[in-house]
Length: 316
Ligand code: ASN
Image (cartoon, helix red, strand yellow):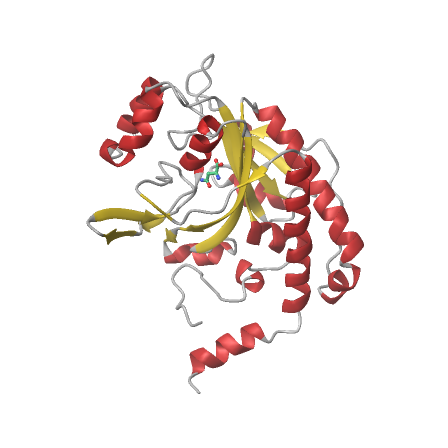
């Protein structure tokens, strides 16, 4: 047998993988229960589309190319995130104003991203969107979700946490909130991991200059109504989201400012122009990152049985 296949087998037959996956099962079951209890409707994921999240300009994004392919003369793309479809769903589907999806995303990141310990080029996020919601509604929901999920793991997976030597704390609500500006001032431009290492509790970071769909504060231009949730102990970013731009004129202005191809978003823009997009807010929580934090693993590949890591060969 060749060396690469042997490595893949070794990765799959690790003693702790069962414990990690049992914890992942508890977390995803709890998320389903929690979202249903809060009135969310579950959508199935979409992995092909005419348009997807452009993932930029965002200082945190490093995709080297967008995965396009042709099918019966149409140019389609693999999902980088379902953000625009989430917005369409909560705007247009009658009597459905809260949705969630376990959504696979493909993001062809630069190979150096392997060394962050938290990047995969294929991963799943629990993506949700709420019509007419504001940032504070999302914060409250996510804080309850995180606390309830972690309590459930501590209850159901005691033995698994022991196998992993993981001492897991239940976070205290409400989580603290910082602005990107204050963290930059304290830690410099690469604040994320330093601030995460300094903290024992998850915390929010608001106001990131990034994609066109994140809402700019109408009262404070240059400030953004968006947020990341940062896991503590050096695990770094685990969720991001925002209130959304829904007015055509603002969306088109930002698409042009960002140098994106308007043509690609044609149908989405038509719907926005007809005034059919509703205000909403939401977020996406990276499942593998949540599992990595809860299980206390050093590198995210440890929680992924079939590794899809930037710059690494796909073996199985
Ligand atoms: N899921 C994120 C959101 O809801 C978007 C992303 O994954 N970039 O804003």
